[in-house]
Image 1 (cartoon, rainbow, N blue to C red):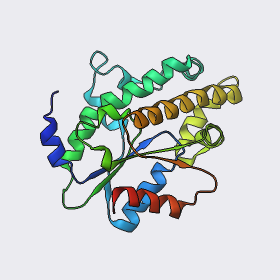
Image 2 (cartoon, rainbow, N blue to C red; image 1 turned 45 degrees about the horizontal axis):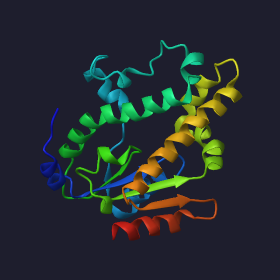
Image 3 (cartoon, helix red, strand yellow; image 1 turned 90 degrees about the vertical axis):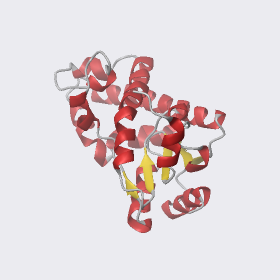
Image 4 (cartoon, rainbow, N blue to C red; image 1 turned 30 degrees about the vertical axis):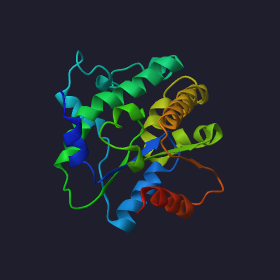
Length: 213
């Protein structure tokens, strides 16, 4: 599907985008924008879009599914998993943008979604995008133990060596974070590192400052 980029820019000029890797505070910041500033948001519900896809046009969106051999799925080569993570978000964007256009335009929207910036820069300018990231150690410590990832961890615990599976999976999440951050830097998009000493309120202030909100 082809969408006119100038039209999208005009229709989505009230959208702000938190890009970046995992465990960097994107979801926490989004919740604060919604609760304290009255923003709207839109979740990346892959299962909502999957019924409208097919294996030929949307191969990445077909996975994962319950019939997989989880041992093999989680232990694929890092580059293969990374490529799937990138592809699934790109395939989803066709549906995601339509949902954005359907949302009321009288209130600003904050989006929390990590994606290579070239896929959204045509309609979300860098001034309304910010890349949040954190250290490799924080990703390794937190990613699979977040409350919203409990279902993933439950499946990993069915594998023969959950600790090694988590260790292997963390390599992909670290790579994903690095690649998105590097792409944002190359596109002159503002980045902000979440460190253990950076409090939520200070991070919120810095994000708002960048967005001039």
